Image (cartoon, rainbow, N blue to C red; front, side, top):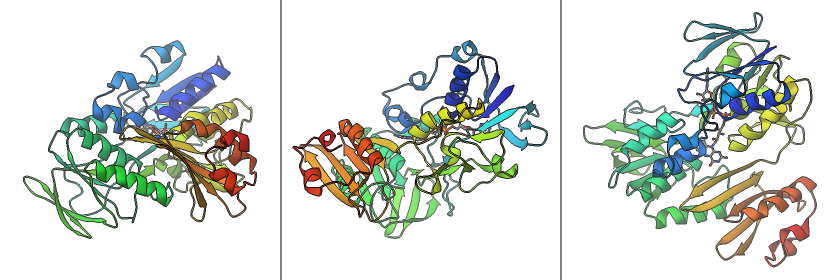
Length: 400
Ligand SMILES: Cc1cc2nc3c(=O)[nH]c(=O)nc-3n(C[C@H](O)[C@H](O)[C@H](O)COP(=O)(O)OP(=O)(O)OC[C@H]3O[C@@H](n4cnc5c(N)ncnc54)[C@H](O)[C@@H]3O)c2cc1C
């Protein structure tokens, strides 16, 4: 039995190792197009840019650990096609790679701007170690850095670059920062941190075109022109689902899979950020762009590959670090929730209730200890008393 995993990122590495733990005999081949063995991406926009962590510290395993686990690691190799009938992959070096079962763990790539001037070499994105090296090498005091997009990565880079002495301008098309994943009050808080640190933050300000000059880039926005030395485009991620689409597997902004990570083909699975996972409680498929899904959904995939069912069922969670502050996001952040804040000095927890006063989501600001009771409250679907929830002197665990 030979399982081939395409994509040597976090989800690919996790699937390989979990699978080895469940099956000592099987051949496992992990193929990745990047030059590096699997590494963690979250530090790319934080510690790596700040020079607080060097690439070896990002590696998820020491060199040699893969061979010890009898996981064959093939790096610098891009898979270009899948022949499902022949159970064979095509690679960019002309190799044909046979498989019995296949896992697509190809992650996502940075979304590009499709506007004039976007091909200039001073327009960068941040997804990989190579991207972080290229960006980090150019950040220096006084550099005029423009960031298009005030989402998680754009704001983290803005915070890191400001700390390095860059003059940072953030351009956001929406009317508040991180609008996709936090309530208005949290957007306002983050907005304040950035402005206080000296970031020029322009909201409702889409980037319309880039005019590359010899000395700088001229950025035309809805609110006038801005000069920048460098532009980071941080406007979201696009799943690398083309291999699945070409092979005829169902794809809808991500590869559609069941709770075990299985595609419509019984021998083909998808793991991590590229997967759009069936969530029965929500009655829909959902794709998550988080460290958590890459870490935990492969448990379901590895079990299913061994004939056991361990459906993926987790309350979504992710985090961001900016200006030394930690923000954790739990559960759903959909429109229409009523948000209740519990503050204790600088720590704050904001809890989202639905119309039946059930906890659906939460934002924890330097307050990670609230995560466990909140997970319980979300999972239980218990109706809450608003007054007790608001009362910071009542510990959340007492409300579970
Ligand atoms: C800068 C940055 C900061 C982040 N910060 C946070 C954070 O603070 N908190 C959080 O929760 N999440 C964060 N994330 C998100 C998190 O890191 C990702 O969700 C996670 O890396 C997804 O893992 P993955 O293995 O599914 O995909 P990836 O890590 O993208 O791995 C997929 C791999 O497959 C390779 N590949 C793709 N196509 C092919 C092919 N055809 N052939 C061979 N190889 C291929 C890719 O090159 C890549 O190496 C961050 C992401 C980035 C980019």
